[in-house]
Amino acid sequence: MSPAPAEAGARAPAAPPLSAAGATPAPRSAAGATLSPMSAADLDEVAALEAVAFPTPWSRASFADELDRAHARAFVLRRDAALIGYLVAWVLFDVAELLVVAVQPTERGHGHGRHLVTHLFDVARREGATRIQLEVRAGNTPAIALYERLGFHRVGLRSGYYQDNGEDAVLMDCELGA
Ligand SMILES: CC(C)(COP(=O)(O)OP(=O)(O)OC[C@H]1O[C@@H](n2cnc3c(N)ncnc32)[C@H](O)[C@@H]1OP(=O)(O)O)[C@@H](O)C(=O)NCCC(=O)NCCS
Image (tube, rainbow, N blue to C red):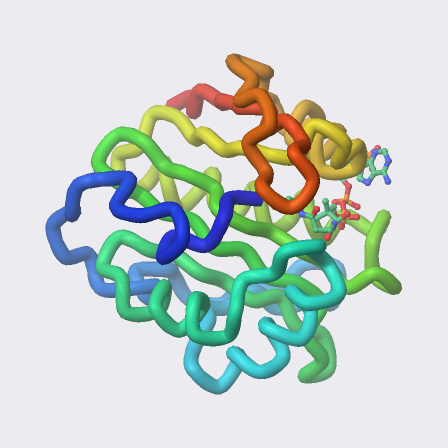
């Protein structure tokens, strides 16, 4: 997971407007769960899941900022109205950056993380991105396993990157095929 963009500072140039989190296609269903663009109505639940999923969670306001960012793409996965997971990414020209993905602790291991990340593959490819990059805590074994399973490779290490515990960040990259 990346630190909240507000904390990380300006890391990338502004992209042309692409209609905020909403350039997402129509919702689709898989394994009884429905994927749709994140909206303001989702923010309380998203922030609540974020708080249980990460040691240094983004705030509700950080997610709200993403909804206003032209190059941000944000999705929620729900089943029977209950939030199962979410993903936030940026698509900036030919590169997408996966900022955060999380699944409810009780729902893990059932393919929902895979569903969210492969949806990002589809969206990023459709918008012209040729690769997706991310950074993840070196000790986050489930996340690294998910990313490697989906074709990401380790391309670098930022030593002591995470301020709360000095943990290293693993940088990963995935080339998007046609
Ligand atoms: C990382 C996370 C999103 C994975 O979600 P998930 O729904 O459990 O993942 P999936 O069930 O889709 O698993 C997909 C693949 O990831 C790997 N994987 C997932 N969890 C794993 C675990 N605990 N141990 C080993 N491999 C794991 C497996 O290879 C799996 O593929 P397979 O089922 O074909 O073997 C989830 O653990 C989570 O929310 N963690 C807390 C938040 C976080 O760390 N996010 C990532 C950093 S932004």
